[in-house]
Length: 246
Image (cartoon, rainbow, N blue to C red):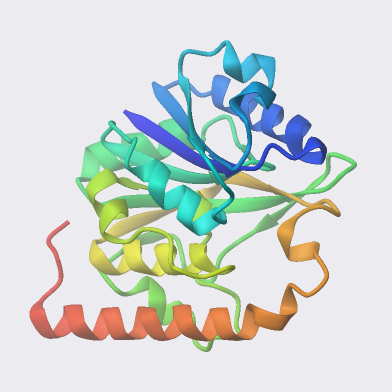
């Protein structure tokens, strides 16, 4: 029913995190599979637990292409009805897949999301309630909760479980960072969906995460501006033509 798409360079400092991500998937109560885009990394370096799991497939890329491109190319390998993006250093909560899948199947909307938690090195978590309020949202309405590019993004990209055709229509953006901002506003602009008031994803806080790297802020303003304008333009275009029914 669900494919989780992950991009990874299998860096030594993230192997343990990827194993933890896999462990969180094994605790899900609904069928899933994972496609791991190996961004220039050798499949031989895949952790043993993942290599032995028939639900995990690798998609090796002969050279590093960056997270956005790797994720989009791996999307070609998806063969299930629903897709969830994920990072190789994060985790899903135990009820993440079942609650969102049940909502999607019961309502017929295009996407279902939830809240996220920051996962700290000591194991503690902090809940992040995105600016978008819980409940049903029509196509394009989620973007309206992103008042300005510098504000907090309206919804967590990796908290979204969506129909595969919807994700293909709004994949990762062509950015070196902030590509996930674009898929989040794209998916939520093309179809109505539902935000559940419960955490479904944990963002791991650690020194090696991309947002903690030197120079990250140099392009963040431009990336946010681009994604914000994309959401505004997409919403405007869809509202002129009439939104999708879901």
